[in-house]
Length: 350
Image (cartoon, rainbow, N blue to C red; front, side, top):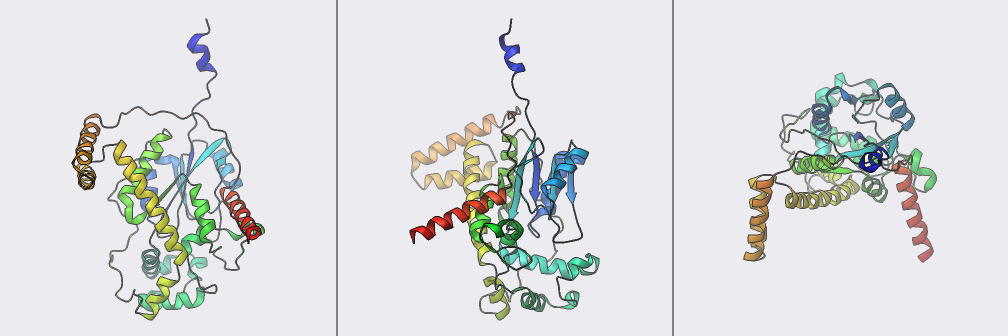
């Protein structure tokens, strides 16, 4: 009398991953965290630590899960180590990148606005007269004190921890981390999702779909902007013709490479999503216009596909994933090993 019921008893139970939102500063992380809070309510934690160099280790995260087993997601500046599993839970790693000059100007405005409320370890990273300086002068003084290695690249350095990667080859005395585009790209390739602030609506639509594939419903407000300065325009001096502007633009070459690479990835993912899901009349019209550029038959197929998606919409049922084989590896170690191996091979070829 075994039959289907007996077979189902041997199936593994679906597992819900722990979402780790690695919040690179000034990449709309407060807004993303608000979406996770809306999705999971009290089962989301926005973690904060006064020490800007503190790192949430895998051991700390495992202890947190023991105390709080129902936890669904964590947002933090201090998720600088990227485990593929925590205890018996797989992780779902997400982060956002931002055009580096936009992130830098946003950081300057935030520091001027919040300087006296920042913890002392954070204030020590900036000129003492920061609240009273113009943006241009604050940028100049900050670059003067920070550019020991001539490259700022805070987004690349956020991902590359010298304590992890140093023994495997790359090393950097800069306290903020390594400035290695190749290593940062390798790490992010192992993430489950990398969004782009300048493509926020498309990024959140792709993120929502990707979470749904894991059996998770996410609710993000596409127009919500938290912790943002009221001043949005870029300074007139942020050009190659201005001495300080030129230094700002040149200081984040690797961040620019990283941003541009993953921007293309998110746009590609969104194009694929539009073919599978109804996202509204505006995306459908954009697709049809592009398709008609390739001929009437392509345009007609696009219109027919959009009509089909609009009619069917997304079904409410969610395929619950089975528990995957868990890995306790840290993503940054695996990435560093891959980069070191490629460098070793390249050395033999040369």
